[in-house]
Amino acid sequence: MSSVNTELEAPEKKNSLLKNIFRLVIPLGLGIAILWFLYRETDFNKMWETIKDANYGILLFSLIFGLGGNIIRALRWELLIRPLGYNPRRINLIYAVLGNYAVNLALPRAGEIWRCGVIAKTEKIPFVKLIGTLIIDRAFDTLMVLLITLFACMFNVDVFIKYVRDNEALSGLAEKIVHSPLTFIVIALGIICLFLIFTVFKNTSVVLKVKGFFIGIWNDMKKVWKMKEKKKFLVYTVSIWVCYFLYFYVTLYAFDFTAHLGFTAGLVAFALSSLSMGIPTNGGIGVWHAAVVLSLGLYGVTKSSAEAFAFAVFTVQNLWIIIYGTFAIAAISFRKENK
Image: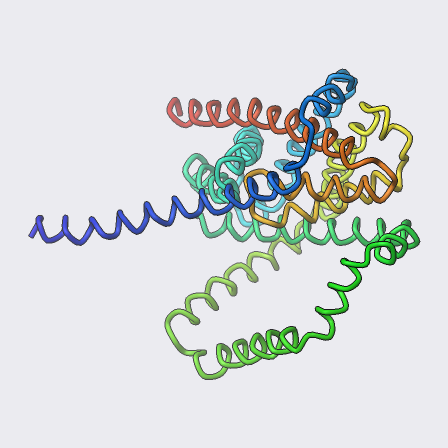
């Protein structure tokens, strides 16, 4: 019997290993491919000379805002958990959120699962409850990114219109997408699939499990909505994104060629870089660089200078994430072992 179980477990372990490899290789490969495409013609000696001239005091100062934003995120998470009847220790929530970002550098999106898992173990809170709070957490982040993008577009409509008109390839691509029959076919297939799921297959075990999962989350969301500290939640949400904006915006003053750009240019660059993080690569590698280079190019920054800026800022900020994230992971592991 044990030999049969071993034979059955072997393919499962192999499949799990393959899944983990794909989850690691595909996002990393995508990020590296985008980096190669972006920097394939770059003169790295010239880029290094540009990076060496940066004001590293300003770059280091910007790091305070990144850490501050993530600590406030932990405080906001606490507000989401308490209405469900649990009282997690604040320091563990802070460590979990900080470690979250270090884990994401190794495996995209895994950090969110890791932080829920580690708090589930250390604070004895059901994992599914924490996933529900995470969905709410991310929903408000998505809303904030959309609002920031909207404001960025409102302040810079003329810049975007001019860029699209001057870029024939981009305007041609947009026109093809709008008028392509394939676009309408994809939309129609999506509607048909949703119709079949909610009618023909509505009583299948998979659909019922998914439905039950979302009903549970919806019930938790209603509890959260009744929280007494709604104003504090909104203050925390705005504070997180003000910190994130300053985390990026302050770095503009570290380079001579971006110091003059001002608030609106910084807002556009921040909005595009935030949207790029929706593409699952390790810590936004590649896609973040491309978004920043594109946005700075809108305001006349040369491609070589924009590439140097993106490379320097991304490297410094992610080294910072590794430092405090590794410390947080070690700290919460130590607290769990000595509990």
